[in-house]
Image (cartoon, rainbow, N blue to C red; front, top):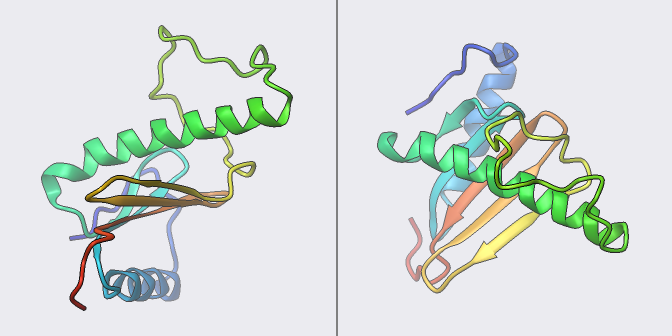
Length: 136
């Protein structure tokens, strides 16, 4: 179930193996329902999510990460959003801004939790069921 993006920077065989091992290790944790690795343009490099959910979820994660990054910049600059405001008319499918200012994003509902760990070039996304009681 791996999507390889045509625009993604090619990974060496050892890097691919390391990514696959990391995804497998994370996926084996209690409650993990999906793991996705995206590059900073939103291309899916690795995913354990269902085929029909991958693209829409990747797009929404990029939008969420961009919005969270803009919010954090606004908070850090004392609420001055003038330099980073995003109007409703702007295209939110543009490449993700550098997310170096955002170190981790975690959102939890009653049934699910989404965790996003942005890096300079990649986003690691993990979807969990925080109420899971059985080990995989």
